[in-house]
Image (cartoon, rainbow, N blue to C red; front, top):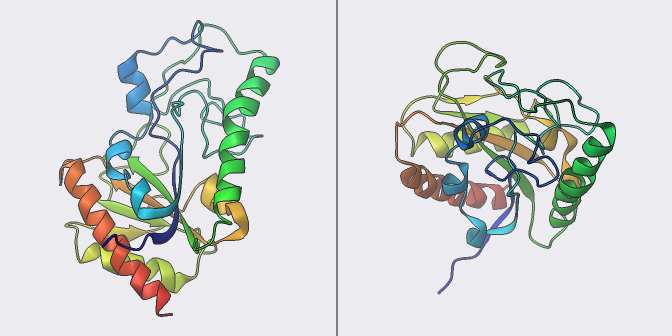
Length: 234
């Protein structure tokens, strides 16, 4: 008998590796740099589409269109970046405003429209924004030094405190190391904007090899199953 799907909308915004064709001729990045700027391992860890009520991801790499930034975030590491998180220049020449607008229209806006629509599907009660993080902070990181094995973020407002604490406990039962809340990440644009008006939690797995990605995936699925039972009992 098939298991009931988890009552979750799973967003995976940074697993893509594709260069948008609109800017391919201007990109200076190697495939290795593109992968390093994104969430390496996320495609495997969060490969849970068949287990959740709704799932949204993108093939486009974070280095070119960052789904976890607001449309008006024009920093070097903003929605359409000029430099990677490792401070590497992305383009041979600055993008025109027309090109930036095209990237937002074709890749950023549809992602967020999909999130908002998916959040309204029957059975969805919470959004999970799934990420991985460098084990040691990059130059633009909000922290220094080694990071926890897992970080959950809700900015103290995007879901009830009891929900994120309960998820942290489920993860602690299954993962070694430190499971932190709002340290070093409190949640980005996706969780803070709360697409669809539902509660949201951001998950960040360290890319440190404390477990293989396949094992991170299976343990995450088990933790989410336990947590979903806890949610339904509230």
